[in-house]
Length: 291
Image (tube, rainbow, N blue to C red):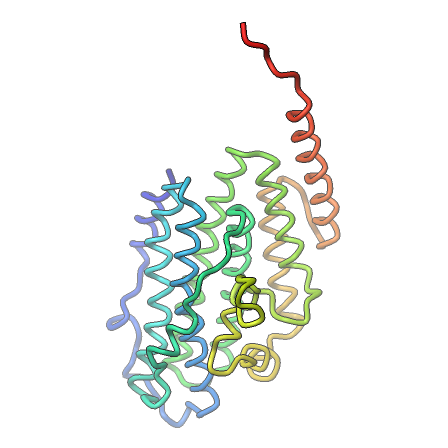
């Protein structure tokens, strides 16, 4: 069981909203209205940990270990939203998200295979770590720079915890887990989509389509692309860093070396074939006759 040790390790490095954020360093001259608006959008996006947690708990009822870890992940992710809102409450109170704006991103996600979802969120944590590191560089006001640096480190730790659960899944399920992880890895590291590949920008409820992504339910649905392309300038060099981290971790996880997404995709096909062959063998195996 991973949860007890993860709880202890996370508790040892947990930061305090009041004591560890240097609020006194705030420099009003270094915060533009444009920058403040992006903080509001990120605060609302982080609030989406609420429906994500509801999804995880529903789809992982079979796994009490992982479900217990959600208590840690949910707490820390909601604190990200809270610290961004606290920043706005202190320094841009007119931009604090309303309860209605926060509640708009809480909606039901369609059931999904838990292994694929785990990998999707592992990749999402890697991406958020890089987005927030870049945001810290873009911002000019000292306190918000510190906040983005702080929450970026949290996202890296969350990714590390997900990685431990992925290792556990492979130990228990073998190629079934490997195949699921490779499939999502190709999707998230491929860089072929015109939209940012992150869980908050993926469609998750067929009945609500197209208003079924977190980003589509924000006050400014197009803000993410603008933030990435025109503001923090998350360009091809940064995108390559995300892909490299995904490929590096999958290389360690799967015991293969993946220099490119094409390498990973070839291995994905091999794993898918192995899983299909194993399933076919089970399906055609003779049934033992009752004595």
